[in-house]
Image (cartoon, rainbow, N blue to C red; front, side, top):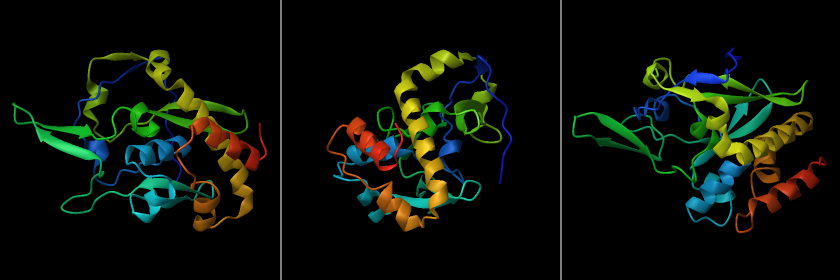
Length: 209
Protein backbone atom coordinates (compact mmCIF):
# COMPACT_ATOMS: atom_id res chain seq x y z
CA UNK A 1 0.00 0.00 0.00
CA UNK A 2 1.40 3.38 -0.98
CA UNK A 3 0.83 6.44 1.17
CA UNK A 4 1.13 9.97 -0.17
CA UNK A 5 2.80 12.28 2.30
CA UNK A 6 3.70 15.88 1.62
CA UNK A 7 7.29 17.07 1.61
CA UNK A 8 8.40 18.90 4.73
CA UNK A 9 9.05 22.58 4.30
CA UNK A 10 11.99 24.36 5.88
CA UNK A 11 9.68 25.03 8.82
CA UNK A 12 7.01 22.81 10.32
CA UNK A 13 4.88 22.75 13.45
CA UNK A 14 5.56 20.01 16.00
CA UNK A 15 6.47 19.37 19.61
CA UNK A 16 6.31 15.90 21.17
CA UNK A 17 3.88 15.71 24.10
CA UNK A 18 4.99 12.20 25.14
CA UNK A 19 1.47 10.86 24.71
CA UNK A 20 2.99 7.50 23.58
CA UNK A 21 0.27 6.95 20.97
CA UNK A 22 2.95 6.33 18.33
CA UNK A 23 4.49 3.66 20.59
CA UNK A 24 1.33 1.57 20.84
CA UNK A 25 -1.42 0.00 18.79
CA UNK A 26 -0.75 -1.03 15.21
CA UNK A 27 2.30 1.17 14.73
CA UNK A 28 5.20 -0.14 12.64
CA UNK A 29 8.75 0.58 13.79
CA UNK A 30 11.11 -0.43 10.98
CA UNK A 31 14.84 -0.42 11.67
CA UNK A 32 17.90 0.24 9.55
CA UNK A 33 21.35 -1.32 9.92
CA UNK A 34 22.63 1.20 12.44
CA UNK A 35 19.44 0.78 14.49
CA UNK A 36 20.23 -2.94 14.73
CA UNK A 37 23.76 -2.12 15.82
CA UNK A 38 22.62 0.37 18.48
CA UNK A 39 19.93 -1.92 19.83
CA UNK A 40 22.20 -4.94 20.14
CA UNK A 41 24.85 -2.91 21.96
CA UNK A 42 22.23 -1.35 24.24
CA UNK A 43 21.03 -4.82 25.21
CA UNK A 44 24.64 -6.01 25.57
CA UNK A 45 24.28 -8.63 22.86
CA UNK A 46 27.40 -9.61 20.87
CA UNK A 47 25.60 -9.77 17.53
CA UNK A 48 22.37 -8.73 15.85
CA UNK A 49 21.22 -12.29 15.18
CA UNK A 50 20.20 -12.59 18.84
CA UNK A 51 17.70 -9.76 18.34
CA UNK A 52 15.76 -12.14 16.12
CA UNK A 53 16.42 -15.29 18.14
CA UNK A 54 15.15 -13.58 21.29
CA UNK A 55 12.07 -12.42 19.35
CA UNK A 56 12.76 -8.75 19.95
CA UNK A 57 12.59 -8.21 16.20
CA UNK A 58 11.07 -9.96 13.22
CA UNK A 59 11.30 -9.41 9.47
CA UNK A 60 8.42 -7.72 7.71
CA UNK A 61 7.91 -7.86 3.97
CA UNK A 62 7.83 -4.48 2.26
CA UNK A 63 5.53 -5.60 -0.54
CA UNK A 64 5.93 -2.41 -2.57
CA UNK A 65 9.71 -2.81 -2.78
CA UNK A 66 9.93 -6.61 -2.44
CA UNK A 67 12.42 -6.49 0.43
CA UNK A 68 12.32 -7.58 4.07
CA UNK A 69 12.85 -5.01 6.82
CA UNK A 70 13.53 -5.55 10.55
CA UNK A 71 10.61 -4.51 12.74
CA UNK A 72 10.26 -4.24 16.53
CA UNK A 73 7.91 -6.90 17.88
CA UNK A 74 5.27 -5.15 19.99
CA UNK A 75 3.90 -6.74 23.14
CA UNK A 76 0.27 -7.78 22.78
CA UNK A 77 -0.98 -8.15 26.37
CA UNK A 78 -2.86 -6.42 27.86
CA UNK A 79 -2.51 -3.98 24.94
CA UNK A 80 -0.24 -3.67 21.91
CA UNK A 81 2.76 -1.48 22.68
CA UNK A 82 6.48 -1.19 22.07
CA UNK A 83 8.50 -3.30 24.54
CA UNK A 84 10.76 -0.31 25.17
CA UNK A 85 7.89 1.98 26.23
CA UNK A 86 7.48 2.98 29.86
CA UNK A 87 4.24 4.74 30.84
CA UNK A 88 4.18 6.87 33.99
CA UNK A 89 1.53 8.95 35.67
CA UNK A 90 2.35 12.61 36.17
CA UNK A 91 1.32 14.75 39.11
CA UNK A 92 -1.54 16.03 36.94
CA UNK A 93 -2.85 12.48 36.46
CA UNK A 94 -1.71 12.34 32.86
CA UNK A 95 0.13 9.47 31.24
CA UNK A 96 3.58 10.24 29.88
CA UNK A 97 5.44 7.81 27.66
CA UNK A 98 9.17 7.30 28.07
CA UNK A 99 11.39 5.45 25.61
CA UNK A 100 14.00 3.20 27.21
CA UNK A 101 16.14 3.60 24.09
CA UNK A 102 16.18 7.40 24.23
CA UNK A 103 18.41 9.04 23.22
CA UNK A 104 21.43 6.95 22.15
CA UNK A 105 19.76 3.70 21.01
CA UNK A 106 16.53 5.14 19.69
CA UNK A 107 15.60 4.02 16.15
CA UNK A 108 16.06 6.75 13.57
CA UNK A 109 12.43 6.53 12.46
CA UNK A 110 11.35 7.34 16.02
CA UNK A 111 13.96 10.04 16.62
CA UNK A 112 13.02 11.92 13.43
CA UNK A 113 9.24 11.59 13.75
CA UNK A 114 7.15 13.27 12.32
CA UNK A 115 9.81 13.64 9.59
CA UNK A 116 9.99 10.58 7.39
CA UNK A 117 12.69 9.67 4.86
CA UNK A 118 12.18 8.20 1.42
CA UNK A 119 14.78 7.48 -1.24
CA UNK A 120 13.97 8.75 -4.71
CA UNK A 121 15.92 6.13 -6.63
CA UNK A 122 15.45 7.96 -9.94
CA UNK A 123 17.07 11.12 -8.59
CA UNK A 124 19.31 9.19 -6.17
CA UNK A 125 18.44 11.54 -3.34
CA UNK A 126 16.48 11.54 -0.12
CA UNK A 127 13.09 13.15 0.31
CA UNK A 128 11.92 14.38 3.70
CA UNK A 129 8.20 13.94 4.25
CA UNK A 130 5.74 14.98 6.93
CA UNK A 131 4.47 11.67 8.31
CA UNK A 132 1.96 12.14 11.17
CA UNK A 133 2.92 9.64 13.93
CA UNK A 134 -0.80 8.96 14.46
CA UNK A 135 -3.97 10.30 12.89
CA UNK A 136 -4.60 12.60 15.85
CA UNK A 137 -1.05 13.30 17.01
CA UNK A 138 -1.29 16.13 19.58
CA UNK A 139 2.31 17.11 18.90
CA UNK A 140 1.35 18.41 15.45
CA UNK A 141 -1.03 20.85 17.13
CA UNK A 142 1.55 22.28 19.50
CA UNK A 143 2.44 25.94 18.71
CA UNK A 144 6.14 25.20 18.26
CA UNK A 145 7.84 25.88 14.94
CA UNK A 146 10.71 23.60 14.03
CA UNK A 147 13.46 24.33 11.52
CA UNK A 148 14.01 21.28 9.34
CA UNK A 149 17.77 21.88 9.07
CA UNK A 150 18.22 22.13 12.84
CA UNK A 151 15.84 19.22 13.43
CA UNK A 152 17.89 16.93 11.21
CA UNK A 153 21.37 18.16 12.19
CA UNK A 154 21.93 15.85 15.21
CA UNK A 155 21.20 12.86 12.96
CA UNK A 156 23.23 13.91 9.93
CA UNK A 157 25.57 10.92 10.05
CA UNK A 158 22.74 8.46 10.72
CA UNK A 159 20.83 9.86 7.76
CA UNK A 160 23.89 9.28 5.56
CA UNK A 161 23.98 5.67 6.77
CA UNK A 162 20.27 5.41 6.08
CA UNK A 163 21.03 6.37 2.48
CA UNK A 164 23.58 3.54 2.27
CA UNK A 165 20.99 1.17 3.68
CA UNK A 166 18.39 2.22 1.12
CA UNK A 167 20.95 1.76 -1.66
CA UNK A 168 21.74 -1.75 -0.42
CA UNK A 169 18.03 -2.57 -0.39
CA UNK A 170 17.79 -1.37 -3.99
CA UNK A 171 20.47 -3.91 -4.90
CA UNK A 172 18.67 -6.62 -2.92
CA UNK A 173 15.47 -6.17 -4.93
CA UNK A 174 16.87 -8.19 -7.82
CA UNK A 175 18.07 -11.10 -5.69
CA UNK A 176 14.70 -12.74 -4.96
CA UNK A 177 15.83 -13.42 -1.42
CA UNK A 178 13.72 -15.09 1.23
CA UNK A 179 13.35 -13.60 4.71
CA UNK A 180 16.06 -15.97 5.94
CA UNK A 181 18.38 -14.81 3.16
CA UNK A 182 17.90 -11.19 4.21
CA UNK A 183 18.51 -12.09 7.83
CA UNK A 184 21.74 -13.97 7.18
CA UNK A 185 23.22 -11.86 4.37
CA UNK A 186 22.27 -8.37 5.56
CA UNK A 187 20.89 -8.20 9.07
CA UNK A 188 23.26 -10.50 10.96
CA UNK A 189 26.60 -9.11 12.05
CA UNK A 190 28.75 -8.72 15.21
CA UNK A 191 28.57 -5.41 17.03
CA UNK A 192 31.89 -5.42 18.88
CA UNK A 193 33.66 -3.33 16.23
CA UNK A 194 32.85 0.23 15.10
CA UNK A 195 29.77 0.46 12.87
CA UNK A 196 31.75 2.17 10.11
CA UNK A 197 33.81 -1.00 9.67
CA UNK A 198 30.67 -3.12 9.44
CA UNK A 199 29.12 -0.77 6.91
CA UNK A 200 32.28 -0.63 4.82
CA UNK A 201 32.30 -4.42 4.61
CA UNK A 202 28.66 -4.43 3.55
CA UNK A 203 29.45 -1.84 0.89
CA UNK A 204 32.12 -4.21 -0.47
CA UNK A 205 29.76 -7.19 -0.27
CA UNK A 206 27.14 -5.34 -2.27
CA UNK A 207 29.67 -3.81 -4.64
CA UNK A 208 29.09 -0.10 -4.31
CA UNK A 209 31.32 2.68 -3.06
